Length: 171
Image (cartoon, rainbow, N blue to C red; front, side, top):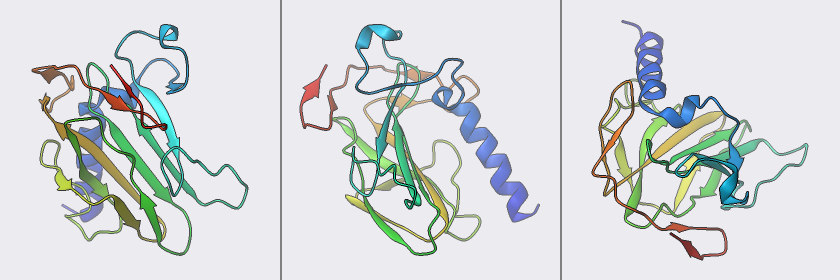
């Protein structure tokens, strides 16, 4: 089995295990009114080098976004560096009681570039160094027990507080 084949198989399993990656509706931003989509539905938050500060200029070669935690999925944070140089990126705070865990880092050598669903590596640093021309995907881990599989369903769902860009907490 080639490294590319193994990576692709794990990537397909990752997508299948995370309903937030294949929603049938367009995602709303975190600032949209809550009554525009079902409770617990995934939202998207855009970032740049710093959380909640995306750079939409033509010269920018860094795109970061977070798919928020949903009733059927964990939060997923994606960082894409298209530049020829590495970038240091400050991570957004995960929800209270959660931590980030690395699922994918395309700059790492195979087979460490992607982990199996449920075996993500905890990442405790506030910043991530993105290698040139790489993609990194982090998932939140914490008080919800994630059950890998085609449905991506959760067990032991507990309410969480999300810390927004202003540092305020919403139930």
